[in-house]
Length: 177
Image (cartoon, rainbow, N blue to C red; front, top):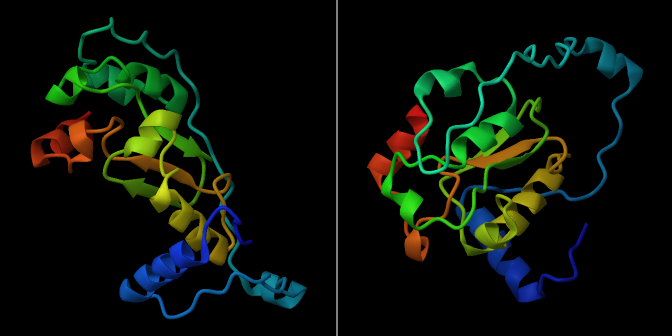
C-alpha cells in the first residue's frame, strides 16, 4: 500500500526514523490467513462491549470549564467531545482554533495517543493527518490495522501556539479532565 503522494525521499526518511526507533522489520505485504487449527488454538476474544448510554448532561456554556462529574458521567465519545469543546481550564483556550478530539473505532482494542495536534491536524480537525499521520498509517498497515480498526487521539485536543510542546501543567489539566 504505497501512497504515491509520498516521495521516495520522504519514505526513505520515514523508514530511517523507524529503524532509529528500533524497528528491524516492516512487512507491508499480505499476511497469510490463519488456518482453522491455528484459529482454534487462539483464546476467544471477548465481545466488544460499549457502556450503556445514560442520559448525558448538557455541555457547559461557551467560555466555561466542564465540571469533573459531568466529564466522568459521560459514556459517549461524541458527547465527551462536545463537553470538552468549550473548556477553559488552561490558557490554550485563548488561542485554539478547533477541537481535534479523536477518530476511529471507539471500541478498538488498540489506541494511539499523541501529545497534541499539529498544524495539519488543526486545519483538518482530525488527529495524525500530517507527516506523523502518514507514518502512523504505514505502521498500522504493517500490523494489519487501519484507522477504522484503532482509535487515535491526543492528550490535548487543541494545538498549542506555534506548535510548541504542551507544558506539563497543560497535560495535567487535560489528563484530569
